[in-house]
Structures are given as C-alpha cells and as structure tokens.
Length: 138
Ligand code: IDP
Ligand code: MG
Image 1 (cartoon, protein in one colour):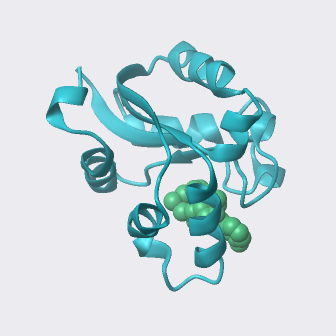
Image 2 (image 1 turned 90 degrees about the horizontal axis):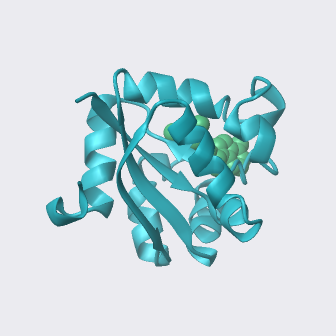
C-alpha cells in the first residue's frame, strides 16, 4: 500500500483519443488504479473543484473548459504518489514540461494541458473524496 494522488484526463485529451495511451504511461510508471470513471462535470461541480483558483484570471476559462466535455477521473496509488505523479506529468505549461512527460507528449497548451495532478497529500484526499465514494475504490 502506497499513498494516493488524484488525476483527471482533461477533455481535449479524451476527445483526441489519448485516454488509453495516458493510462498506459501511468500504469507503466508503477501507479495502481484504485478508482476510474468517465464523467461530465457540471459547471457548478467544476467550479467547486477549482475553487482554490477562483481569484486567478484564468478561473472562468478553466471552469468552462473542464465542464464542456467529459473527463476521466482516477485515484492512483504508489509510494510517494503525489510527487512522483507531478514528475510523470511535467510542468503546468507544456512548453516547460520535460521530454517524455505526459504533458510534453499530449498537452495542447497551458490551459489544455492534458492532465490534472494533486499538489499535496491533503489535496489528493480532498479531490479523491470529491469524485469517488468508498464503494468505487478498490
Ligand atoms: P497544475 O495543474 O500544474 O497544478 P495550477 O497552477 O494548479 O497547475 O493550475 C490549474 C490548471 O489551470 C492548469 O493545469 C491549467 O489547465 C490551468 N492554468 C494554469 N495557469 C493558466 C494560465 O495562465 N492560463 C490559462 N490556464 C491556466
Ligand atoms: Mg494544481
């Protein structure tokens, strides 16, 4: 048993048909999928998820984009899950993301950057609880 992180495969990556390739990279990097589902977030739910960013200039754009089309949500387990997953996905801006990272390979832009990754153990648990019931985690 390792600790957990929470991820979303963002709409543009799902539409582009990159779900399988991204999940492949995640499993190949040693993460275990604890929970997984495709969901279409309402604008209200997306706004609640990103409430921490509500003061930032891109908040409205981010909420619109994340609620426009379905996403894939997942809980992932591994030792050092949060930090190792941030390493696997690369920098927020794909222009700065290291070669071989998920964002370097699949992101379209700073806003449409293919995947979400939790930024702390505390937020990983908050985000996992936001999206999944106990019965959905195996
Ligand atoms: P992170 O996803 O790498 O943790 P955050 O700073 O938490 O990055 O930002 C959340 C999300 O908001 C990013 O993944 C990206 O989709 C979007 N975002 C961040 N900065 C900008 C920006 O300057 N313009 C547009 N969208 C942004
Ligand atoms: Mg973040």
